[in-house]
Structure formats: C-alpha cells, structure tokens
Length: 255
Image 1 (cartoon, helix red, strand yellow):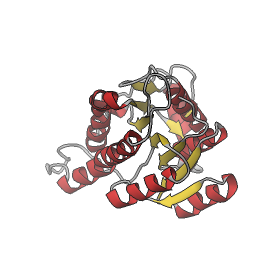
Image 2 (cartoon, rainbow, N blue to C red):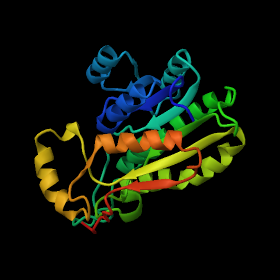
Image 3 (cartoon, one colour):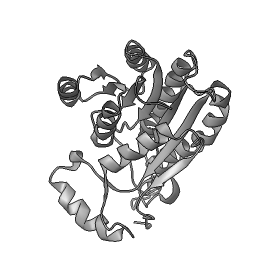
Image 4 (tube, rainbow, N blue to C red):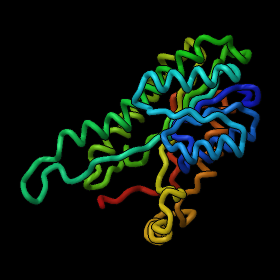
C-alpha cells in the first residue's frame, strides 16, 4: 500500500509513540490527523508539520468520527494507528488488607485501553470500506493497534492493564478475518519497555533499571523504532492478523 496520497489518523498522536508515527507518516507523504487530548503538543505539531490536530477522546464515538471526517477531507483514509494511553489502575487481586481489587478501576482501565481501541477500530475501518481499493489485491487500508508485552507476561499488580492489552491482542486476528472481504488489514504492535518524552527526568532511572534486562539491544526501545515498524506494516501487504512483539526479546518477570 502506498502511504503517499493517503490520509491517516493517529490516535494518541501527540504522545511519544504517536508523535514519532505522525512524523514518519508525514515524511512518507500521508496527510495526517493527530487525534489526541494534549492540546498544546497537538497544536505545536500542527504548526510545525502542517498536519491537522483534532481534540479527540478515543472513548467517544462523536470525537473519533470527527477525526475520521477531518482525515477524509484530506484524502482517502487508508491508515489508522492507535497509540493512545491514559490512567490505568493496578494492585494485587487481593491486597495485603484482604480487600479485593477495585472494580471501578478495572472497568475504567478496560474502557480506556480496550473498549476505546475497539471504538477507533470499528469507526476507521467503516470509513476505509467506503473508498475504492487502492491496489490490484483489492486493499483499502490498514489499522494498526497497540497492545503490550504485558498482554503475555503481565506483572504482579498489572491485572487490569494486562487484561485490556490481552484483549487488544485477541481482537487482532478476528478483526482481520472480519475485514478481509473489504480489503482492510489489522495488525497489532506489542511494545516492550519504551523510553518516551513523557517520562522526563525519570527516564534515566527507567533506562538504568530496564535497559540491562533487555537481551539485545541492552536498552529501552525508542519511539522512532515503533514508528519505523508502523511504516513497514503499512507497506507490507502480506502482514495481516498478526501481533508483532517489539521488545528486544524482553520477557517481563513476575515483578
């Protein structure tokens, strides 16, 4: 699939992984909509690159539809990348005080990290389906979601987050099968530990802790490496229904 001439929505596009993806797709010739809640950073990217910023809550049908409409005003929507984050609850299933893990926190985490991904997936895919195929195989576009290696080796205290990210991973093949008759591919990236600007000065401490635990290369991932994979997933039409770990062979220990 050709990136140039397509429009793209990057949900969470003002964050570390998302911003790197916005820059990569923009450089490859896509018309990009940055869909996020970080107004200052989103508008700064809009001013710097000439991309469009849309204030977007990924859990909101109305917001996501508005971002999709904005992208379609720039060209046929062929690319959707979801990197959004948000608050995540945690803690042991039964605490030291004997109390069970909070149900409201679990629901909120699943809503942000799973239900919102489904929301973006369904709405962007519906938009892609309205356009004519863009290649001889009948392809119309690709949806790239973001899980985590916590989907496979969730650590102690990560149950809500691991459950949500596990759900994202599990949706991948089913969604790809559902959308294959329409020529829409679905692929998920499961990152390991990535060093993003959001960590600020704490990033040095995280690098010192996680870097030596990664088999090779012995460091945390970089946002540009995530973005490079997104570009490859867009351009390689035979990648479909797959969850790709991007983790330097890291496997999370129990804690």
